[in-house]
Image 1 (cartoon, rainbow, N blue to C red):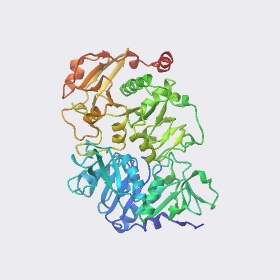
Image 2: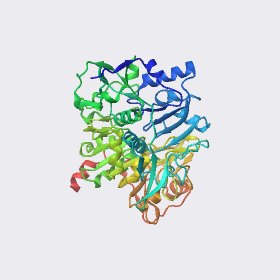
Image 3: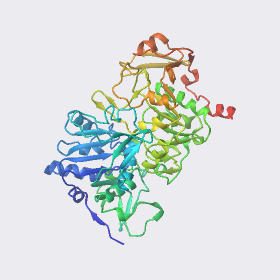
Image 4: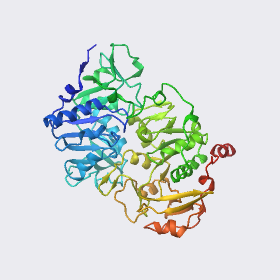
Amino acid sequence: MKQVSIITSEQAADLIKDNDFVTVNGFLASVQPEALTSALETRFLQTGSPKDLTLYYCAGQGNSDGRGGEHFAHEGLLKRVILGHWGTVPAIAAMANACKMEAYNFPQGTLAQHYRDVAAHRMGTFTNVGLETFVDPRISGGKMNDITKEDLVQLQVINGEEQLFYPRMKMDIAFIRGTFADEWGNIVMTKEISPIDALPQAQAVHNSGGTVIVQVEKVVKGGSLDPKLVIIPGIYVDYVVEAESVLYQQQTFGCEFDPSVCGEISIPVEAIKPAPLNAKKVIARRAAMLLFDMSSEAVINLGIGIPELISSVAAEEGIGDSLTMTVEAGAIGGVPLGGVRFGASINAECYLGQAAQFDFYDGGGLNLACLGLAQCDGQGNVNVGKFGSRIAGCGGFINITQNTKTVVFCGTFTASGLKEEITNGELHIVQEGNVKKFLGSIDQITFSGNYARKHGQKIMYITERAVFEIKEDGIHLTEIAPGIDLQKDVLEQMEFIPIVKEIKYMPDSLFRNKRIGLKEMRKQKG
């Protein structure tokens, strides 16, 4: 058995050459190979090398504070970026807006699956994901600035069906974070929230003739790791780096190691503190009411932001353990966490790689998806990816929304300065937000209402004061909150006129500081 080369992070950074294609594993603030990315940044700042890299990753990297993907945010270091999620790297977004590099945004799941096509030396990745959205080359092809010219996605028709095609890319360097390596280079990820992209990423780079570098907490004796736990076999690994500092090996930035998010222990869900009653919780509660109509076998995905609260509401209502929550990072079951720990799940039943999770999503395996709502137009199109010069990126939004049977977009009705009061089962607007969300036109199509209508999806838009639904003839206003004035608080705050036929009030139990009784309702129905 070969002995893997164990090197320092500085030596790893020295392996990167000008014009290399670098790909990094990780999910937001978790599973970040900080020792490697920090060392590369330091080398560039000290020497001006390497130059003109292409950076490729799927999930967001970092926490908008200079860590994660922002280690690459230096003019001259990057020539091109191909990212799934941009929200945690505002410094890179600023470079894209200033046309300091070429910039692409593609669906997170498609990029994760692309690793496998690169590894297998297939022509590339074919998918319906992204049709009629901004990644469709008939719109912008995922290009994020004026200097980005090359078409990295093509529209093709195969057997009469439209497909988007991403040609195979050659990948030179992989930066991956594991937990332990043995002397032969076998890698386990037992303390991580998920393997994310580690295996297909290593295969893609290895089979491209590139170099696979893995950061770990410790190197142990060869053959001492449980082979059933090995995520990356040593035959794919060129170099291993032991993290020089515990800060480089945190399970999640700024958080103590939590064995309940990596399968070591299970904790009582009652230990999760209920969220306070506010507009965001009202939205989460109304979305959670859809669980009432679903069987206990329903499989659900919750997005970042307000949708994160739905798992908390389900746990508070005592139905969390009767539903199967999933997150893009790979966890099946358990209770998804939010904030800096988004991507991790307490008490998960299984941890898949990201590409496998998105296979399930793309194939319509989800019964319900609840995601964020930033902008919506009169066609039902939704934008969550780009707002003027601010680039958030689509992440897994397109994969999830385009193929799920029931999709709910969750968000406050307006933003920026919105103040509301919830009293005696009613909602009252104290100060209206300065930013409208229901607009005549939106900055980017991240979700296509037309595509959803053609494919028979059930689409709802839930806010704290109104609920809408896509039907064949357009967007219908179906519910308003008690205490809300329809004309003043809803219609005058919109730039398009919804169809108004039958309106009912949202249940006043949503606006009271006690459980809404979802568990009891499910029992009565059952």
